[in-house]
Length: 145
Image (cartoon, rainbow, N blue to C red):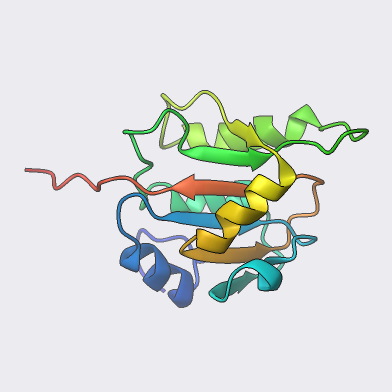
């Protein structure tokens, strides 16, 4: 364990986050998502819910400030209804370290799959919420100088 880093962040996830460059994307996928079908770099975070993972990761991870939407979720397929509580929980977790983030962009299911193909990595979580997948776009980490 390391001081100041949540114990739900595995060593493998910490390494992936450190290796990502600005503009790279990481998918936090729900337990239903076919991650292995769309990306070869898969990490497991079984049993961990996405709001908890967002809260743990985002103090270490700069979201891209050069794009209008550094957070992307899947839009509902025709005939399905989104549970607004899922997005609200995610935004609440995001806003702890990123208070200026107020929205998530929704994209069509197959467009989300295509983004997953080009993502740096996919983290398979224990999230059971329907349409619970989210993409984070990494920004430039401030140097503090």
